[in-house]
Amino acid sequence: MTDAQHRPPSGTGAPVGERAVPFAPAYGEASLADLSRSLLACLGLPVPNPLGLEPAGRVCLLLVDGMGADLLDAHPGCAPFLTAHPRRTLTAGFPSSTPTSLATLGTGAVPGEHGIVGVQMAVPGEGRLLHCLRWTAPGGPPIDPDAWQPAETAYQRLAAHGIEPVYVAPPYFRDTGLTRAVYRGTRHWGADTVDDRVEGARRALQESRFVIVYYGEVDLFGHLKGWGTPEWLEQVAIVDRMAERIADGLPPGSVLYVTADHGMVNAGERIDFDARADLQEGVRLLGGDGRARHVYTVPGATADVLAAWRAALHGRAWVVTREEAVEAGWFGKVVKREWLGRIGDVLAVSYGDTVVIASEREPLESRLIGVHGSLTPAEQNVPLIEIRR
Image 1 (tube, one colour):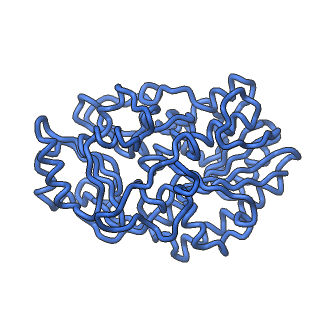
Image 2: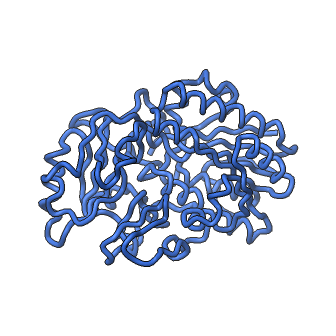
Image 3: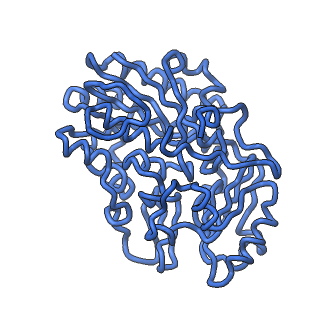
């Protein structure tokens, strides 16, 4: 794919109607997986450097949950420091959700290789779902994060080369299932407030050559209030000041990179699975999230479910089979055979402002204003901003 195909267009979603086409992630060229590999190369590891990042003595990566590139472009005045520095645009990958993107960045592998292919995924053969953010799977024994996501992380590779990565994030993230699955190899530095995280980044950079700092409130306020609202804009401004303060404390020869795990759109039309008998017929489990649904069917019902969902979501979503999604490369060029059962028999990936909610099964999620997960530019495009000292 050419660079022009991944330049962020105007607007916040794909065109509505039959001419809408998925915005394909730039795996192998400009995705979060490529950023992961390039950061290792930047620090001197003998690995490919697809983004061509220049060497640095120390690297700090500020990961801002939900700060999509298109969203930042729409409000540059809220982030004067960030917009004053060189920036390129990467793609998150599919689905454009936090667990998938953290695993992609954490392993340097595409979703089809690391296996975290959604917020909620079927546990194959067990008739239950793993919720990756909560790391819960009711109806059976706990899921071992090391077994569910067994790939070596980029942080473990750094540690093997004598670089101990430090992860600066809220204390309650320590030892959660998702943290164990995607941040293995890091030393967790608990930091609650913005000041704590800035100070944590500065101090950690005195001890380590690689520090990753997580900030989640842009995503939180986008979900609760909507992107572009005053509350959301204030969070972007906080990130801008936070990045400037971290940059001011960088040791000589260091670099700060600022990126995100996904973008966002504001929900409009809500189609309620729990109120639609036509959508429920033949469905065994409903996974994924409102913008990227994994639909697991009862034996022999896939064709009927596919037809029903295509009819119900005509002009609102791309509705495909597992095989079609894999063939199209949505999860990358390779999907490991052992991960196929985690992918829905049918996938419903919304465009425009449509969200497929489940008001009874997912009451909190069904009320969210800002949403993400799909293959639209506003959800896929994430910034990569570079500040060197």
